[in-house]
Length: 498
Image (cartoon, rainbow, N blue to C red; front, side):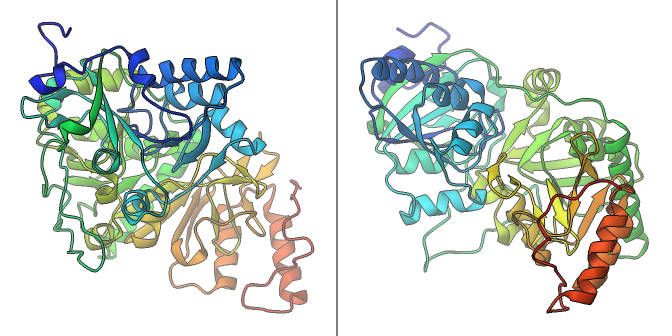
């Protein structure tokens, strides 16, 4: 029975409260399960662990038991890691960052569909990904009318609740009830040919509802939990990340002086990671005021900008905080409701909105080649790291598309600037600015050979610059085509420092 302070306020759903173990028993081998979760926030905490124990027991009896796992993005060890460890995942989509999951994908024992995050919901509605059997979604409360208060990520939860045959809810009382009202759940999307424009013209526009709709007849279980999200570990900005941030801030100031950006800039989008946080830290001490964000995730650096008043509003689909920032945000949730909105990722990453708002997109990469093609997902062309995530949604449609990385990897033994990228996620057509700690390459308006000169000169590490220049010079003499000169017999060889 629920406790007297239960967050399950719907009389119709109270009778469905059960243990995580009993709820996990309702998931069957071979089913596709849509789980909440995006960058370690808002994921179910108890049911995946109980399901992993059940799968492990089935395998111990010699019985097959694997499922398809669909999420918003990466989750946590209690979900991805636990299920991957017991070989319980047949297919994973659309993004992951768990080391056990990554190991199984690269070993060929788990299938993985790496997909643009803005495409997931519509592909489910189109029927491109198969049938969704079960939704397992974390919520902060079930209201008396059966509607659901989202937690710290929205992701694809609206679609999971709409499309799944059966729904299992985790009601997590760790989340501050003041989160209610922070979300904007848009129910106006339709299938072609009946689509309408998304009516967002500024990051702060609210166009939907504050809660999820939910058919109570589809709810088969409710599990009560009290547990925090997985938190990210952000290290203090080091010299490399500070240098990258400095180049970006200098560039943005230059664009303001040239009249190509307003003094308050345009809405910012920033990928996850220490370099991205360093850029936000730089903005904290920089000259820009009245900043806004239209992004996927709200990180520590953006939260600092909001709390200081430098940023007036941020739109995202999820939070991605350190432990201290998560505690702070949860404690002060009521204070942030007028400055933060969390949306479904099909809206936070919607190309139409990104282009209309003129977003400044800043994302990390693994490597870039001398013509501006960017690899953000694979090592040596075949080993997946995490996935493309939302970087492609933003890069192709942004007003400014910036990619950044340290100039070297593996303690300086590998160059992040290479003759030819071993895998391409973002073609030269979608990349405007490349940044390393060495400098910034502005590729706008440049033909391929011009881009190569700027990239090698401004972004390559001095240890690798001579070998890159030598490759380019020889390609200029020996390539059969001179639009993007390449020597294909050696283009993908590892290059070594001079």
